[in-house]
Length: 169
Ligand code: FES
Image (cartoon, rainbow, N blue to C red; front, side, top):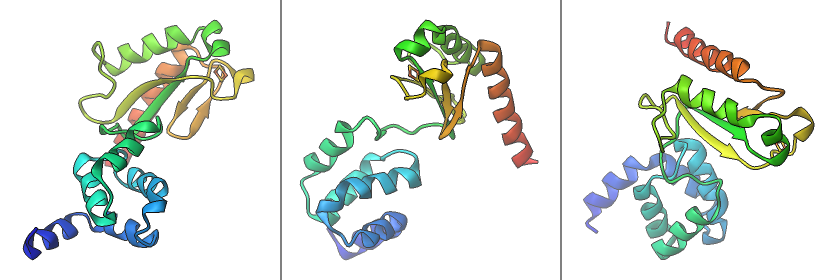
């Protein structure tokens, strides 16, 4: 790679460079590095994974392998709000499915679509979140919402949309 190309890539990934620096460019710190990169980008872009592999002198397959092994890592961009509906046993028997269906409708998600076109919302299901006494549970980013109903879920989305409009005003 020419020095010019290296410089432009380095500029483009200056935040990634900062993260790599923070972890001492140590290949053994790959997982924390990927976590920090995901916090920055909200997912792990392919070109960033290749950049990390080249910088740490690791085979790209190793970096991609780590990124795909852990469910926590996302290889596709997610929305600003990631809504997770718990579909563990306790939540399921307390009607998590109508909540999920309501969310799909309210967010206008088509079949197989997880993220809204405007990149505001991503809808996912998760297995038990460890809060079964509060079932059914919905988590928005790190915020836990307990004893949910389809109606409460609709209000929740409305609140998040208003929050966004409030920020834009
Ligand atoms: S099953 Fe939903 S929190 Fe345990």
